[in-house]
Length: 177
Ligand code: IMP
Image 1 (cartoon, rainbow, N blue to C red):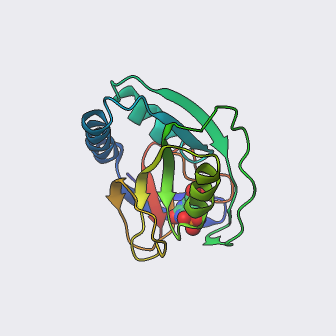
Image 2 (cartoon, rainbow, N blue to C red):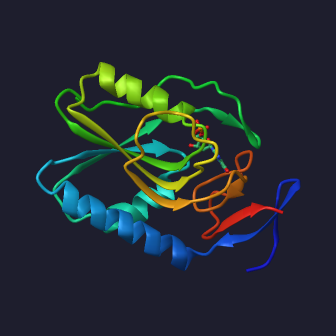
C-alpha cells in the first residue's frame, strides 16, 4: 500500500483489509456466542459504519434485526463535541436488546448521546460494537462491549471513515502522515 492524498492531506497505510476482516470476525464470534438468545437489534450508525456493518453482519449468524440511524458530530480532523439529533429511527426500542454499531469511538460524545436516547426509549439492554477505539481519547464511563482494534489518538481514514466527506470508499485504513 502506498501513501495517498485525500483532499489536502497525505495519509499513510495503517491497517490493511485482511487485518480489518480478522478483527471483524473476532467481534462477530463474540456476538454470536453471547447474544444467541437475545434477538438483538443492530443499530448501524451512518455514514461511517456502513463497511464495518456489512462485513460484521455477514459473520453474525444469530436471529437479529438491523436498522440504520444517523448522527453527526464531527467536522474536519477534530471532534467539535456537538452532536445532532438521532435521525431515522423507526423501530420500537422499548424492551429490545440493542447493539450500537459504530465505526470508531473517539471521545465518546456521540456514543453517550446515542446511549442516553436509547435509554430514554427504554431499551432492555444497550451494547456497543465498534471497529476502532481510541482508548487515550475515550473519556466516558459507558462500557464499549466489543472493540475490534484499539488505536492511538491519530486521525484515520478509509473503510467507511472519512476526512471531510472523502475517503470512505478506501478498502484499507490510512493514518494522517
Ligand atoms: P466521538 O463522538 O468523539 O467519539 O467521535 C465519533 C465520531 O467521530 C465517529 O463516529 C467518526 O464519525 C468521527 N471520528 C472520530 N475519529 C475519527 C477519525 O480518526 N477519522 C475519521 N472520523 C473520526
